Image (cartoon, rainbow, N blue to C red; front, side, top):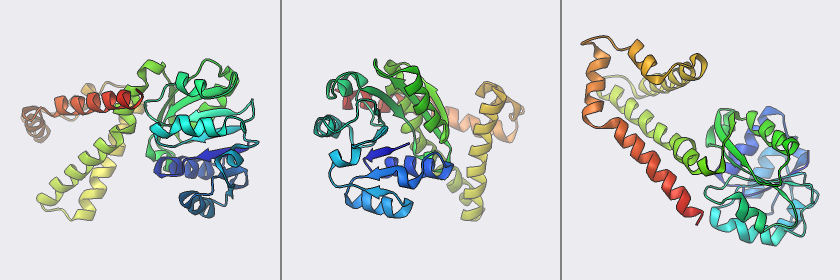
Length: 264
């Protein structure tokens, strides 16, 4: 599969590393633009480097667009004449709808939006996608297969994509903040920093896997480790007094609304 990439920053790099790591894309099939970040990533992965953006996409079967939302339309306008009619255009930019992407492209170009998060690099992404009006079942299946290799991938309605940003794309940073706080709590109570960090990180991994693999509601899982007047209940009482759940919900709402603003 010939795959072109425009946008080789943190997210684009994480996705490509994940695909190469999973063996889905051979480095020789990857073409990156001749930019500083593109050259560095190409050298790391063994990918090819083209000159302009138009040269990068020439002959590509799939184009991954990982540029900033405000750059998308100008990039598509630049490359539209060089794109193969059968090329699948995949955008991972927040906030920009498929209709805006289709309007900047010729004919009936297949467009899909995917919102992964940076754990894609290690095959643990939480991704959601929506398809444009010209993307076929076969083309959608190709993109789903690519992102399933990086972790979870769900298809959702386009109207739900901003919420995906709040829960998964921005949400991964919220989890890191909680991980940092949990670690610092362990240090406060006498654990070494490396031990506290490892215990906290593994606790998050284990809790996430329990939720996914058992299918149980988080409340049920919480209640299973909460005994009356016990240590967990004492800690939960502190979180509840601080409106922990409400604060997290507000963070998701604010990130969702910001994603919608970026698309306007």
